[in-house]
Length: 310
Image 1: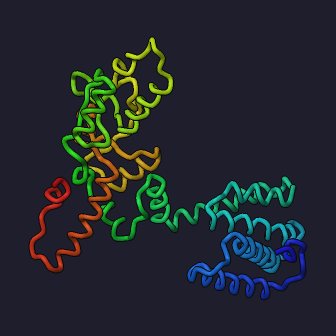
Image 2: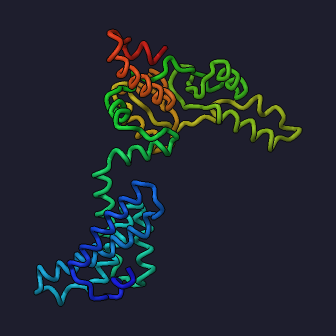
Image 3: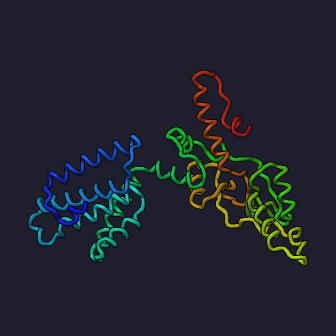
């Protein structure tokens, strides 16, 4: 890599050979579990690819030679592009190569190449990107079969109904008791007209009690008994709809790091239909996959709703 960046006289054929051999060896190491990493190979591959690209341009359009940069400039841009695409770290790649060169003139080519490479990877590997979002919210990476289930299953088939609904004027302690009795992780907070106000979880209840224990004073001992559910619930909520797929709902959950979404009517968002939790989504995928396997041996399989809601 250092020799390429110092404009050593490598022929185009040699650069292509280095690129192909290194790519093959990197794939073998990564696939077999051998020690090799991806950072250094990405830098080597990017430098070789960029230098080869620069030499190819010089051969194709020799008249533009005086306007073209030297091969090391193309090598550095190639390093940034390959590193950004392989590590999914575009900002790191741009800053790293700028630190190496200290040349402002290379920033725009760097940004263009890095942006293009990351965009191409996102377009080619859509399923992988979706799975990484699932890992961020705690779900295991999905196989192709499970991803297909998410694309075909509607929210209405996996949602929990009827969900536990608690009045916003209920005290925090009473709400905690209701949720533990119902053995539910989440509850919907409503007003007297049964309109959705927010959502509360067991974590919210425990956090409120912990804060009271930490900052309580003799003259404020009754605060925990008078604090209402509306004071601790999450009011800025996202919704799910019965006619959308689980994949769409999961993307919405991943965008905010949520574990649950209230399911409402698409035309009337104050009309509560159910509650969709990530545990139900995981269960739905497992049940559907098992049902598919059973079809080879069992002539009759129960409908989706009978199994999921049982």
